[in-house]
Length: 547
Image (cartoon, rainbow, N blue to C red; front, side, top):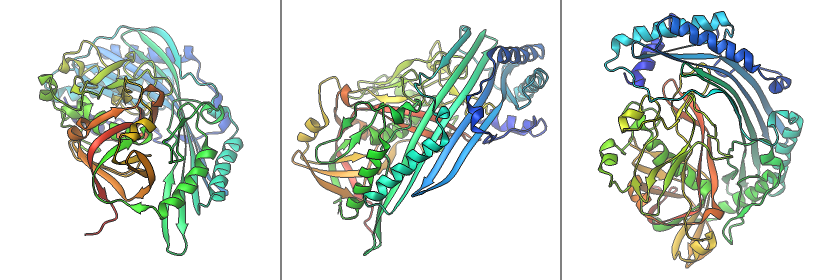
């Protein structure tokens, strides 16, 4: 049975089996509660109650996720704190296989009796779904872990930092932007802590404590004589780190000479970036509008990450390749026949793109997925050739793999886990190359930094990307800012135009904090690493031109 059909049928079944209150966004909670945890021995006892109940009702496999999801979001504008959100969501999701078919149920009644009841309902749903199942689910084997724990290696828990201190930092960033000429500024701080306990009939009991953080802002400069305005977003990346991302200065990576840009990795200086953003937003008002045509593009990691995400990350998700998933921009052109040919040129020989859930600091960094599979790194594109996809336990056999890639996640205890993107990244160049040295060899080009608008077709093939900051390159030098830039290509042509990649010293992470997929929609967080990369002869359009 396809996942889409499974969800459709399960949702219909759940109408008569609603399991109490299921808070979608959680309930309000006092910040003091953020430092509390649930006793691991209690979670194991609850998990065993679920697994035993599922087996007693006829499940051949069962897993249980006990999740406590904490969010704190701060929103400010100019000199005001606009809103502070403190939310908690706590409950249990139980997935079972019965009669070769998946069933899922969830409950916020976190007691042995409540969980056992939900497990029995999950089995009943599986048995009902089995009437529509054409082939039984095949699960790739997983060796039980026993009792293990893992925690994001943070230095400073962001939830332990007083709210006032965090709000003051955002207001200070706003003040920096205003001092440097911006008319409006919004700044936000997003913090997530997922306390996830997974257990399965394979013999796994996995306790994980996952932390993520994202400071960001948008400044707007206005020319009051013309009414023209321009914005510039923060060049931070959401990270799988603690508050040290904002408070422990680490070396930065300078942008190209003549741009005034900084690349941030293990530390983000929001005050410095806010000041620079204000100046650049003002400069964009008088920047030259781009002349359409072919350009060599030099793409900063903070921009290229989104292109990787849309044209490679989602395109190599096996459920999209198989047509099981089509929400949020469709399926994938990277079909099985192209992979089976072993000669499909996704990109030039310089292009090595890998999936990796083990990269420290990345948003997707965990030790086990939501099926109890130990995470790892593997190749998707090797020297330009498509060599693999991203798969879960019940998909591995389709691509002749003996084990899952560890790509199965849910965004909440109340959501069923399904295939989500791993961190997908472009490997840095093997030859020493700085950004300035790369630009020296560009006669007619554009340097692009930061994310912008984007569009991609229903097979992840034809696309258009904008950006945040654009600089014109002439005869090997940055000569000024440009505006109204967007580039168009198809995925295969674009990656085959890759002509140079900076070395590892320029490697940084881009991130998507709220990546949507599925129906009912779920969110996930994922990073994409790269060094600055050059693409030759890409078609650039002027987004301000009227026909």
